[in-house]
Structures are given as structure tokens and as C-alpha cells.
Amino acid sequence: MLAVTKSVHTALGRCDAWQLRLDKFSFKRSGDATAKTESLKTESLKDVLACYKERSIGHLGHACRSRHRFIEVLKCQHGTRFASVELYADSRLLLHLGRASVLENVGLCADRTTGLPLIPGTALKGVLSTWACWEANQKADGSFNEGAAFVQHRKQFSKDVARRMFGDDSQAGSEHAGDVVFVGGFPATPPNLGLDIVNPHHEPDGRAKTNLTPNVFLCVEPGNTKWHFVFYVRPGAQDAAKLLQAASDWLTEALTQLGIGAKTAAGYGRFRKPNETDKAAQAKEVEKAKANEDAAAEQAKVAAEKAKQQAAAQSSLISDYPNPATFRNKVIGNLNPGQLDRLQSEISVLQKPDNTPQCQELKRLLASKDYKDIRKRLRDKPWFPKEWLPPQ
Image (cartoon, rainbow, N blue to C red; front, side, top):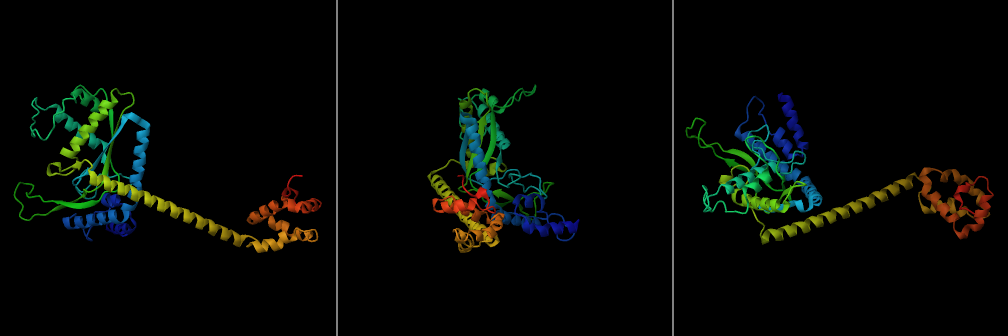
């Protein structure tokens, strides 16, 4: 088992998937039966973070653009039943700590295939359901157990709207699903990851710790990363506009005032509405992305032209007529009444697949008016292929 573990870590130099490193290969051993320690755990998470920054970040840009195309397809498919809320990360995001991993409590929610950090639709639905429940149970004066400033009073959103949005949860059993489908939250560009710590101050039995040992975990860093929170109303549902407006308002309030994921009480998982700085930065990002795409298209064009030239050069090496002068001396130079019989030895050569361009050139010349007399003479030659001559 130890030999297998060592061989796996040797192969990690070729692993570009940061999520695979985190979930499968971040459990290192020191050559014996040593279990996971905080020092080895920190070292492993630093390796994961380096893999994300140095290797994964490149293809994650393509993953973001792919998600954007997916969102555009949903928008075209659902039309007025589709909505998206755009917010910016204002604090660290910690979601899916309990994700299956060889290390404990270090998980981070990401697409299983591409490794793109994201927020699943189930998490959005849970946050909105909690927010709607709090709002529906406010007092008549707008006060709430958490404080009047924590939850704003919204009389226009009734309990019936919440039931339609999230589905029936009666004790007798659920009778219908919610009319709003929450797709998830997706970053417009690859977000930055970082390391954070939590310091347990008490032992499991309640005694105060004498030596504090920080627990290290991964998190999504805040910054100028824009997130798209996508949802739509099911086909056939009534009052789609009302449901979308309610979902948009609740989602904006919940994510900007409450947050999402773990440690929200400590300020994690908060988002904010875009400001002028964000809009300017996003415009520059779009311009930069377009410039990169144009540069990539130009590079692809140059590469294609280079490949074409290389193919032509390779073809000329294979051909019996490597250059125009050779073709002119052996074929075109014999297209006169006194030298036509010399052309006979070139017929089998011109019929080779590698000499197809030269054969086509000969056919083009023979079809021109300048070679009318030569065409007549060649029709009388039994060795000349008549299909190479134009119809009479």
C-alpha cells in the first residue's frame, strides 16, 4: 500500500486537476503509518493551491465561457421565464466543507469535471427558503428576533408565493414541486482560491486547549469576480414574472445580508451589488477577453496557413514535379506539334495521385483557346486519355 501511495504521488507532477489532487491525492504519508497531521495537511493544501494557480487556472477560463454559453442557451430556451442575478463576492466563500476527500473538512464546491468553483442550485434554494421563512414570520411592526435591521419587511411577498416557489412541504406529504428551478451560481471568470484557518480553543471534553493548533482549509477569495445566479420558472406555471421578481429580490437580500455557505455568522459568503468600479473592471475584462480571443483566432489562422504551406512543401517533395520549372520542361514544353510524342512518357506519371495538381493544370491549359490545334492533334493520339480533353 505504501509503494502504491508513493507511486501515485510521483505521478502527481503530471496532474493538472486541482480538485483531483484535493479529493484523492492530498493525503501524504511520511513513509510509515503516520496519520494525517496538521503540518502534512497544510503542505498538501499548499500543493493543491499551487496546482490551481499554476495549472488549472488556464482551462478554467474555458470552463467559465462554456458556462456562459450554457446560460445563454437557457435564456433563449425559457425566454421571459428566465432570470439571472449578478453579484460580486464581498467576502470569502466557504461551501461544501464536508465534500468527500482524503482530508477532513477541507472540501470546496466545484464542478466534478472541470474543477470550476461554483454554488449549486440546492444551496441557493436552501438560503432563499430560510430567508422567505424569516420574512414570512416577521411581527406586524416589522421586528424580528434577529433585529429589525436584519430582515426588511416585504408584505407583497406572501406565504403562498413561497409555497409556489419552493414546493409543498406539508406534513401529510409533498404534493407538488416548486415552480422555480434554481440552476446555481457560476463565476464569470475563474475566482482566486486561498487558505484560511480556524483555531479550536477547547478540547472535545470542553477543557481549554493549552496548545492551539490551527486547522487549515481552502476557500474562495473575494475580489472583482462577478457571479451569475441563474434560475427559471417551469413551463406552464402561472405568474412567472411575479415568481421571478420575488426570487430575484429574495436572492439579492439573502446573499448581501445573510450570505451563503459555512461560517456566515463570521461574515463569510457575503456578496454585494455591482458598483461603478466593478462595472469598469468588468468592461475591461470583457475587452481583454475579446482581445485574447482575437489573438487566439489570429494565431490559429497563422498556424493553419503554416500547416498548409508545410503540406504543400511536403506534397512537392513527393510529386514528380517538385517545382513549376520541372513541370514546364517535361509537360508544357512538349505541347507543340513537333514534340507531342514526347508527352506520351509523362502520361503515366501525371496519373499518379501525388501529381493531381499538375494533371489539373494540364487539363486547364488544353481547354483554353490557345491550344485548339494541340487538342485536335491529341484526339488522334491513341495513348492520350480523351477524358483530359474538353468536350467538342
